[in-house]
Amino acid sequence: MRSAKIEEFVKERMAKHDKNVFKTSVWGQKTTFCGRDGHRFLFSSEGNLVVSWWPPIMQRIFPTSLINTVGDDARLTRRLLSVYPLIKDYTFALTCALFAGIRDGEQTSRLGERFYVLLKGMGQLPVNLPGTRYYKAVKAGDAIKEELLRVVRGRREEVEVGGDDGEVEEDLLSYLVITGDEMGRRMTEEEIVDNVLLLLHAGHDTTSCTLTLVLKHLANEPEIYDKVLEENREIAKAKAPGKDLDWEDIQKMKYSWNVVSEVLRLWAPVQGTFRKAITDFTFAGFTIPKGYKLFWTAFSTHLDETYFPEPRKFDPSRFEGDKGPVPHTYVPFGGGPRMCQGKELARLVILVFLHNVIMKNRWESVFPDEKIVTDPLPTPSEGLPIHIHPHSF
Image 1 (cartoon, rainbow, N blue to C red):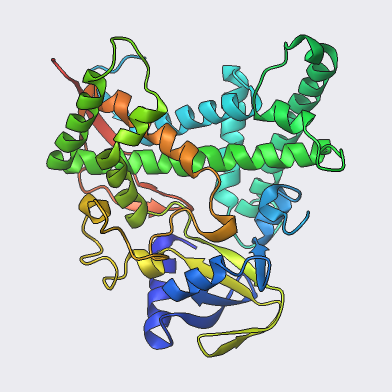
Image 2 (image 1 turned 120 degrees about the vertical axis):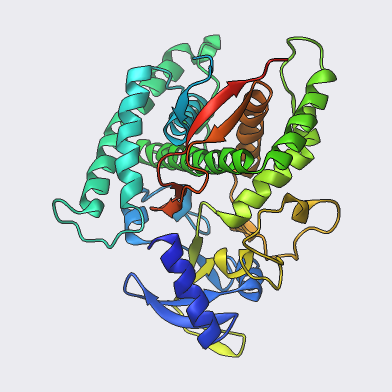
């Protein structure tokens, strides 16, 4: 379901029935949608009344990953560039290196192409027939798993042979291979592959679309661009020449992060997620039966003028000082025990990238009014082609 359609779907039913809860059907599942009070209720009820639940395609591709586990279980010159494909390649290569130690360009490119097919199948009806997006996504997911399985087995061999000499690469993959639970049981190869697959997916898709939309808004909002540039210049001036950014510098990028936060409000990469009722309970005067699927969506609050006046206006000042959003109304990373664990990594990747780009360049959109389409993530319809103008200072 595309964002424009799901937004209209939710708004129409909230207006017709109730702002906090209404019953409908999604993917053939009996489903209840929730607003701000629903966000608060669901995020605080994990494990007691509800547990995480994902659509069939997600369960098929990531069967044993944490997503389905509950309870115990080249230099820039003045030229035309298409931003989204470049940023997508960059973030995917970065996540491959960070999470799996994959740095071979050919292998990264091959995996990236398969991930593109996989992404296109997310949110599709589970019709496993040749030619459908679901079918192609399943095939792509299986091919990715086969390749990652070879990577996992190779790392296990490295651990067994070179572990005592400290020659094994220290990354997340090594941690998953080596670490056991409190009973000493280590993850199976299938579990490791599923979790690496999930991390590669979650670690680049949402970040790449957010970065692309940040650059789009900065191109269209010169005053905001100038403020972000000034903040980053001040940070650079305070550092010794050639010294890299550190976490303290990231903490100083308050206005830059406000800009990113406003992009996430308008264009939340994840439209929402499901929970499943594990017992009967009452909410907002309605009885929710055991087994019902509950879907919370960022649209229900992010674009509600009750919480965000002039909700369609791009205004980073919403996040300044102590006047931030009302709790449970700004939820691009979810909430409760299931809040996105990659939030700070995403913040780090986005702000470091933005710092390096804005300190060297100004850019302009070829199509200032380029539409944003969601299929399944929000991205510019033409990939955001821009003209780059390197700074002369």
